[in-house]
Structures are given as C-alpha cells and as structure tokens.
Length: 205
Image (cartoon, helix red, strand yellow):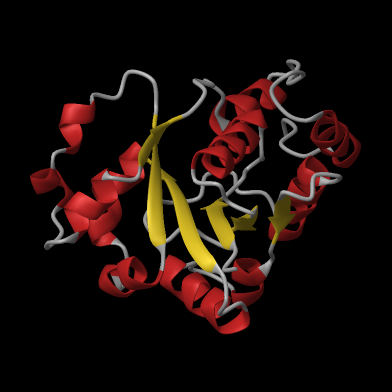
C-alpha cells in the first residue's frame, strides 16, 4: 500500500511546540504515515531575520522530534544551499521515495501566496497541498479567485483545508524573549530549551 508522507518546511528559527502540534494535526487529519521537517537554507520570498546557523536549527529539530517515529528531519535543503525552493525538494523526494504520496503542509497565508512559488504548476502536479486555517482567519477570504491559479487547482486546494489546534506561538516571539532574557518554557520542547541555553543561541549580544 502506498504510504503518505507529510512535508513541513520552514526556517524553524527556532522550532517550537506550535510546529509540532501543526504536524500532528495534519498527520491525524490526512492519515499521514510520517511528517518530514525540512529546515530551509534561506527562504526565497522573505529576508531571514536573525537566522541561526543551519546546523544549529537542524540540531534543534532533531532534539524536538527525538523519540517520536511519526516525525523525521531532513537536511536536504541545507545541503543544497540557498535559496531553498520547494519544487527542488519535491523533485528530490520523488526521486528518492517514488512510492510515497506527498502532502505539503502550509498555513492559510502561504496558500494565498502559492501562485508566486517557483514552478508551482509542477509542484501541484506532484504533491497535494494541505492548508491549516489559523484562528480568526476568514474562510471566505480564500475564495478561488484569490488564489490566482488556473483550474482545477483552486477547487482542489480548497478541498484540503483543515482546522487544527489554535496555538499562538511564534519563533519571532521566542527570539525576542531570549534577547530579553525571559523564559521560553512551555513554548518549546524541554530538549530544545536546554540546547538553546547550552549553546547560547539567540542570546543578546
């Protein structure tokens, strides 16, 4: 039977509990066999603010998912170097794991920007996008005409919306708290908090 692999990309700068809960919600909703976390080398559509070293972000992710076989981490985008394009990642995954069905996990904001992604037509052909609606985001704002994509993609994309747990945690806030020497307990896994402290990541200069 064909297995289902979820793809969750991002800077993970740093990874936090919101990322893990999103992955779990998508895994449950679409009956995925595993979710693969892929930290990018450099986001192509926005500047990287205080982006920690790729090896450190990779180590944080590995700490975060250790012991949970439902989650895995890949360094493929870091190994390719910047900038990181999702189409290259999907091409590589299809070449390495042709028997797996790919599900790309994104948020509603990213869905509205999808038409700007490199080779989006190829991406839509080779993986399914699943979109989590965040709390307070009006579903009507996601009308097909707003996606700026040709048929049949708007209809298909809007069939894969799901509502996950509302978790208001952001990497930006975590970095700010660390810069101000405030606690990040309960916002990140304990192992991630320890790694950040031991390696003095995001500390004030």
